[in-house]
Length: 233
Image (cartoon, rainbow, N blue to C red; front, side):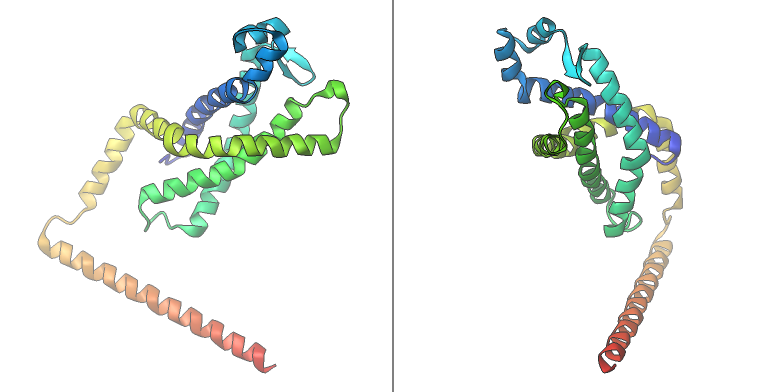
């Protein structure tokens, strides 16, 4: 996992680069491929795009690379400003990164990111790919947004969870290999060196758990007292 702002930006950059290309392929080939080939009477999607002059976006036809660049800039900005911070906060409300297994916490972050970014980017795409030649209608925009969410959410969830994020983690660990090895070495140095230290560490952990349980009991008792006071009134 990234440990500073620079690493978070690099992690987001790798994620968005892979995700945008995957979404463009999914949108053009899987969702709209048959329609494009039928409309332009071609045997392939690329031939259909070349025949119609590019991808329809913002009321005009743009080259494929321009569409990818626009979507990348918007997605990268949204990921850094909203997606990454908000997903971490949402996951932290349910799981504790200091106590839960890192894989569980990372999975929670992925699910939260998909839940935030998929509707947000689908809403942006509803504006970008809206058929402005028919006139602008709010209800049509909302209907297109809902349709895009229905198409994109299953694809986003499964690809991020089982393909994109595992690939991103491998690339991230390769880029920051030295920093990660140094961090792992520091963790190793902090581990108990002998049996006595292991036993003392277990007792310290037991004391912490007992304190947490006592704190939870006090909190519940105070809550019950408040409920009784409210009921008596």
